Image 1 (cartoon, rainbow, N blue to C red):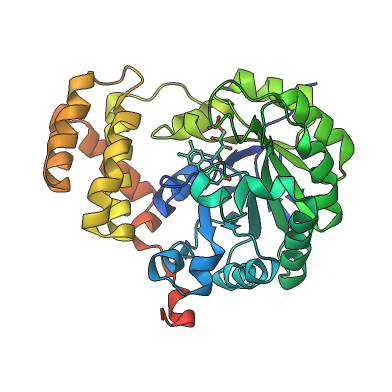
Image 2 (cartoon, protein in one colour):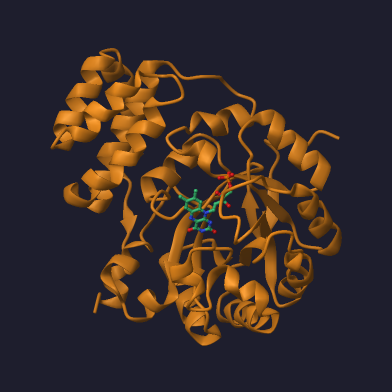
Length: 351
Ligand SMILES: Cc1cc2nc3c(=O)[nH]c(=O)nc-3n(C[C@H](O)[C@H](O)[C@H](O)COP(=O)(O)O)c2cc1C
């Protein structure tokens, strides 16, 4: 049976308008990325993972991850950590910042995180994982969700043992990326595990991993019974993937690509400041301009430029029509420039 990707669904009281969720990605899921994702039809967007220890210590950069714009909702803010009480306190801050959901990271395979007992490491300690979920669920009134991998080792089926316990502990949604932590991003996501998990729990399941097209999204939803698909790498520098998955529109013109990239750059500068944005944006050039849209050397040329102003001028020279598309975008979405940011930082005083 075909699922209508444009149909709404619920996570507890929160209505999610479409079946496409934009994945949390560290170093990618800035506010500009999330707002663009919503504009292109993602029903739910997620922050990158935020350290509960960083929040506890009021680390200025960590607090910056809690900035939420009024046009991002519904939005999940993801936290990671290993101690139930610290995670509960972090969850309270996330709720106070205005997030619609608190997501808990039990999937991060990176050693820097797992060696502290956080991320995917929690899957091997179901008792502690359940305790984190119940502490967080008791601390906030917004729904709590969990994102996990299949387990630590290749072939692991840990998610099927832990998943139901996490739902019992208060998780109102489970997202499964069915690769092992050891696999990192190699091999492929085994969504037969997603189908098994769906059978075992009463909460909606989100399927994450290798969803790159409408055909793949339909197949994953139909074969797993998941409530929604999550899209990560396919949407990097490519919001058109979301639109394609939703069944609208195909490849963008060069002008559209440049207009979106320039808008993204301007918003990112506003969010991160010129200096941080300059290095942050470099990886996006290849993502936007690749996929056969521009010659490879063009990306290299942009990376080597010193200032973002030079990058913007070079882009607009390469696709002169883009300035009209950009003006149209800014006119159609005036809130992009005017939207107010909630600044929870003031609540927490920074120090
Ligand atoms: C650069 C990058 C950063 C990521 N950071 C996070 C993260 O902070 N939290 C998380 O739960 N998953 C993270 N992921 C995993 C994605 O959310 C997603 O589960 C995974 O990429 C598989 O989906 P995809 O095939 O659509 O990319 C990250 C993935 C990538 C590629």
